[in-house]
Image (cartoon, helix red, strand yellow):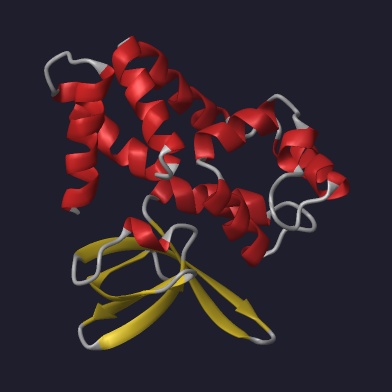
Length: 192
């Protein structure tokens, strides 16, 4: 029913955000709520799921994340909560790459995904995620020092999505050392 909501982020919790759209607060469950900042105006892509127990809204940073969520939902045994948990634990590119390679063991590390469900994910989605795997090859074009800086940011605890968000800004900067890129990246990440 909804494609997206555009409004002010009024509340951020560990599993959801609240978006105020013209005085109405919409509760959206998200894979990465902390990608948003309180009081910022944001466009959040939405998927509405209707079940016997209620109507729930799920929010995503991009249309691609929403499409990936829907692909995960198409797998037998994966519900909205499991799909969100999988997406929160890993970026779409790495996840798609693991599915395309048939890495069942890798997929079992996600919450609520056993060997049977991981095998079902590979069976249902292998060959259907080419768009996400192609995006992953973009990082190969980056300078070695920038690649090192991006890996260091993930090691410091930033999510892959946060790092991906600032990568284009770092690419535009003058060639630098890994330490220099990290300092500039931290300034961008803390600016929000």
